[in-house]
Length: 173
Length: 100
Image (cartoon, rainbow over all chains, first blue to last red; front, side, top):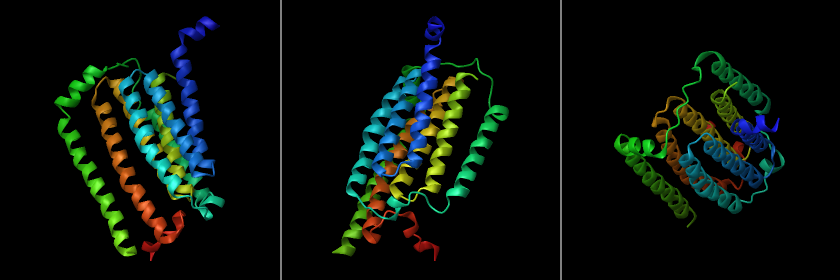
């Protein structure tokens, strides 16, 4: 029993971490306080990083934790601490679209799962792991222009954020 | 059920949960976080497909999505701050001015 488990330890861990990530994502929908939701999202992201590590793409796992948890979510947590507004969205968690939303979500999940089972899915056995070297060569040879273009996007985002703040500052004196 | 199928199912479930969160929750910040969850689901599917085919293009796309997510949050948070300063609430229904 234990030997069998140790042989399939990777798959076993993958299932456990995946289920935990799913539970954290489901908790995001029902928790009341935005800070609790942020903590659930952070745990989901860390668990996803664990999944990336388990399937062998360690550099994406590292950047998942560095960029998503380290930058994006820290920013989010700061915004939540700045905006401690106890309004109707705090007492009344769900909008009026709760029932149609759940129906639509279940339908979407069913359609996508059906497509996974019958349509787009190619049979396995071709799983090839690629390392950091192969990724870096492709990244810097073929996709350097795309990456440079994202820096333009980042500059545009920074300028837009400054513009948004400045407009309100002018209005409020 | 093999590993690829399991991961794709997880990615689909994360995306659906994120979309559901954007639709059913009232709080603007929670809606933003649910959008991040959707991006995470897409990332997982991209990595899984990249592993399956052995090409690096999917992983490159994941990196670009990281950058886009950072830019998105950098512009979304100031907008939320401005909206809250204007109306004093985080409830999404309060910002229906464009509905007419």
